[in-house]
Length: 315
Image (cartoon, rainbow, N blue to C red; front, side):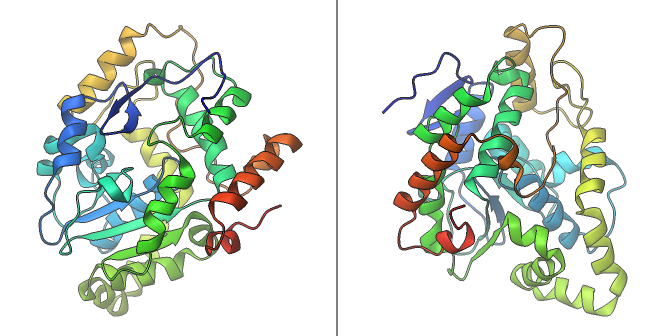
């Protein structure tokens, strides 16, 4: 049943997938139609489930702990292909990893590519997603309210559709040889363990680099840490009206900026924060008892018979 709300973020639809209307349809189509090359690595999550964090982890594993000389190079080194299309794909220095939010059923797939998937508690995802939609001018949702956004989340009427369907689409592939599957919560709990496992998944040369020099692992953990990452992303993105980028300007970037400007956002907007708190359990500061009960019910119904209920027990 469609959510009965007064306000919605601005979305378009292609191949049955809701995606931000600010994205270039050409670029989004290119992401959907891309044919992976041997050795390609994709980082995939439902929005606001740890994508940017995992991008940093993979980036610094691939760089063997070497810090980026220029923060804006992050846009080249970890391109969001749904937004940038082939321009972002072709410009990425290798080794590297592409970011996407596509469901498994629509992923550019090859058995010779590798896929990293990150899951997150749906309640925390919902809260983080709300602030993301409200703070990005291109969604036209700067005056949106959490109660309305919650209804959209429950109805699966947000970008990349339903959270639970997206998770269920990837879940059967969690043990595939070319899939690395983890959770936001595991990253918070024991990042060192995640980094070591992910290094083995990405290639022996990264394991060798860590074993040869302890500074490599220490630097990976430092540069992918939340505080460092947030600071550097503030350098990457110009946190001003219109979400102007300080880094390389691709067609997909320009399309987003021009679309956001066309919405004529108000002079005073919430501060643009691509990375906000990065904590576990923030939903408790936002959900009403009724909202918690309703989401618990959907979680139990959709994830019945899966390990997800062990990851995110009802509370």
